Image (cartoon, rainbow over all chains, first blue to last red; front, side, top):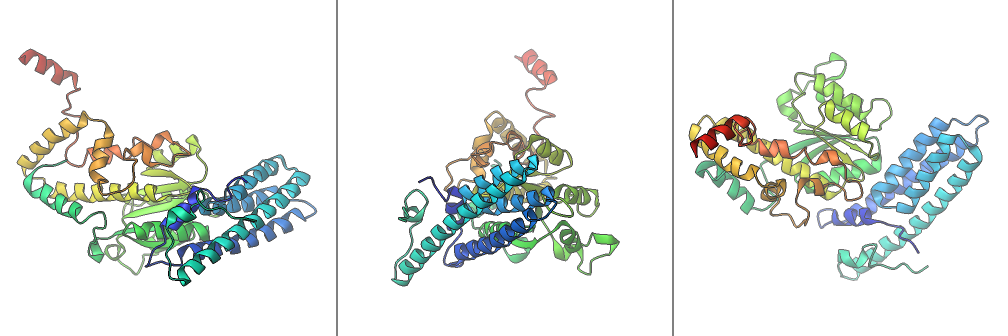
Length: 143
Length: 255
């Protein structure tokens, strides 16, 4: 199972400390809101009689950016493929890509929610979270 | 690295306190961050705050200009002194005004052109990087932005502040000569020992300027950038450098 979250996610965890204990949750929440909005915009844009590929590409570019910033590498990679088809102005392929992106987004959303829940449980039980344990290398999410 | 008494003591005491210099508020580096992405704004803001910078984050070039008081020739009600923006870091791809256009506007302004501008972009395109550097950008960071990128910027800002202070003291010839001598010695070394001096308290293993950039995208243009400001912080190396043919001739004739 190839990594859903890359090193950038670890970078975000490094930015969390006692003064900012909810940083990761906050960024991840913003990512969820942003992504869901963009996915809706993309669905609408591709549903038009005449597709504005520039507009579609702009949305995908944004989604690629935020998924990259959060470390959601599979979403990012799906966006890269998507942009290629935007350039080709291929509606069919774009629709397939949108499906793919949405799928990857759902998968990473699950992983992130699980991770956050787990972190919260550990903290609630009085423990602390060593970054190495929860970095994408060390942590195995069982489906 | 200056070994002169006055200047180096100041430097050494700051390093003893570690990277967290805890400067008084008016001495904190104030960064204006510009990015249309909410996620990226949140991340860059935190990256900068954790690196002891004061941050103002805006979502567009227009807002950045408004903040600086540069929009539509409307003079800001806040005096420039109060704003004291030390660094502007902006995304390249933004709707409306791009980061490149913002860069140009800032460099065209007599009030703000001295402020270093750093461009961020997810696309590692040489032509884009070159264009930004030619327009006067201080540096170009490939997204996603990491702690090491911000650390490098912070070190550059510290060196820059230091250089300014040193120039203010530097009417004393003694200091200048000492620095020239030290700098000539360090000029012969590779750039990494120099950056080691600035990042000695950092746990990061990669210390040379070029390796501080993201490993996945070794933008070659990043390596020359930190060096000129750091090298020139006390005295220019080139005019009297040992490489000058004239100098070499003189030296050999004196042997």
